[in-house]
Length: 463
Image (tube, rainbow, N blue to C red; front, side, top):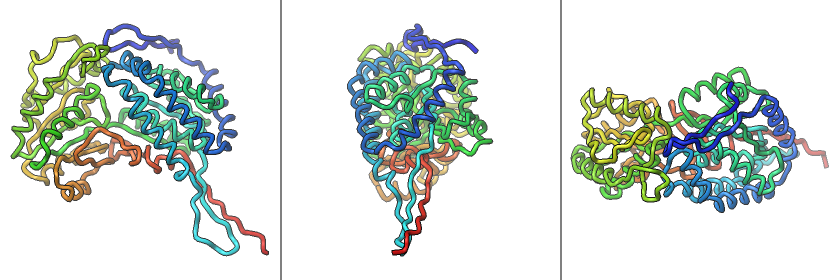
């Protein structure tokens, strides 16, 4: 095991920060502290928990510009966007989960029965391990951290090494808000230490956002314990553009949904099916708008497309594109359309003449590329959208609400959109099917995985 790690900034290839790994004694101390303090934290009032979490949100918003710049330096998203991960997405999700906590965690009454008092209570699980990725470090982690603490749990956060400073910012915010020491902690640990941590007897639940293989490893690691894991594992999210779609709005949203964050979004658009009657027009306008993106240094506020997180990720996307072209796909973005920069900078790409023999239409790309196919009718679109190992989100673009409802009922996905994409509404359950994972975060249902039901069955004294 090495003693530490470096955060290499994708934009400059320079070392942005260095950190040491926590040792085994520090890990054990953190877990024992989390277990001990949680016994008191679970007995604090919900109002007190809410006050502290609200102060955390305010602290994040106050530091959004500075912490947004850190995100840019750590993972390469253009600086014009990164503060909004905090000011918009983080704040919206955290605030909603705080607001809904009282209702979601209230005792569940039963029917009245003479001589008895009966109800079901939501009990906290204990210590929640949150394993968060680099692509949206605050947006993914907040889905579990704030509701876990609101529910009376303690939290241990392991952030991706690429965005490790985000874990420290959480600790700073919780300390400033007055959270008792030990309720929230973070660990900088390597892969082997993570594997051991997942198996540890003092971990009561694992919340993971990452790859399918990572999810399988977590399931295997907890297989000999009676604990659960929430697994959000990404997708190959499709869009279906109907012939009656509002063209300008549809293209603007789908281009953004495809290329925002250099396509490194688990619910970003990765494949598009367009009704044959509007296919040519759609492709022309889609490519035209794509060419207006500005690729370059993410610290430049005029840039709209930054580098991918690392060279290996960019190389994998290029391999998918090259393989598709060999199989007959046509690339519509030419080399001269964008500046020639070294990897991990990668220009966007739009492919047509694609089909489901190609990995570009089946395997997660997680980069700035999309395949666009023509379909003859709704049924063909339904079959193609469902022809995937993933099922995170899918969208339809139409003016016909009845059609959207009818088709949505036939699509195997966790979220079904009409005329929008790549957005998590905190009032709705965030969940996936098939290899997109299992479990649920956000909405009032997001509290279910972070608590256990406890039944109270009280026979009252005779009067």
